[in-house]
Length: 229
Image 1 (tube, rainbow, N blue to C red):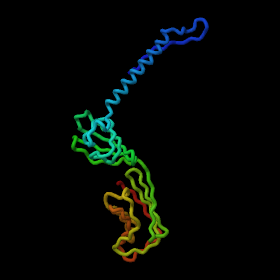
Image 2: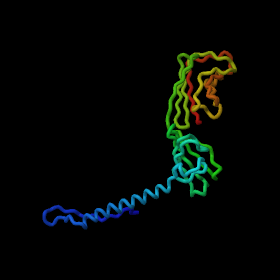
Image 3: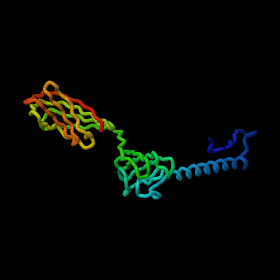
Image 4: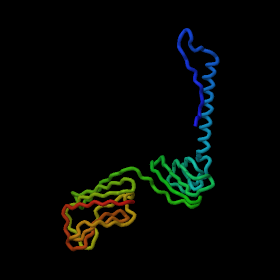
């Protein structure tokens, strides 16, 4: 689709036979600029009609119209304050399969959610694209360390263990994960089947040994596990 139309003048150099500097040629340039400006203004006006800013919206994410909204503070059903929000729906009255994507200008996190009706919105989910690595040590294991890597919703724990004697049927705490690494349910990782030793990662983020055999000794062992949060 052609948005702008303009008939160019072919300028030719030369003392004789050159393109004349006539009012007609200058007016052709002026008319072309005028037409271009008018078309750009129409495009800009159409874009503005499709964008919704917080001055025209109620203080509730559930009531946003389709388009872009800037929501600062005090909005109901917000994942965070100070977000740019894109709302997708068939029209402003039909919330069937509506989708919202929010970007926080403070934390730089992205969120998304879906709705069947204007009141039936799902919970916000975090769109996690970043990769983060943390290292943990424990004074009980002076030469031990864990590396915890988070990439999106995937968490991987790699651990090098020092010598340790474990008590039977008891947990020995290694380290405690930060909130963003905590699993949705307790995870059990077998370490040595011959002595029945496991690593437990519970929903509180506690990573610990668990031994079922009495007087179990571990010497410089390793474990690696991956889970989804």
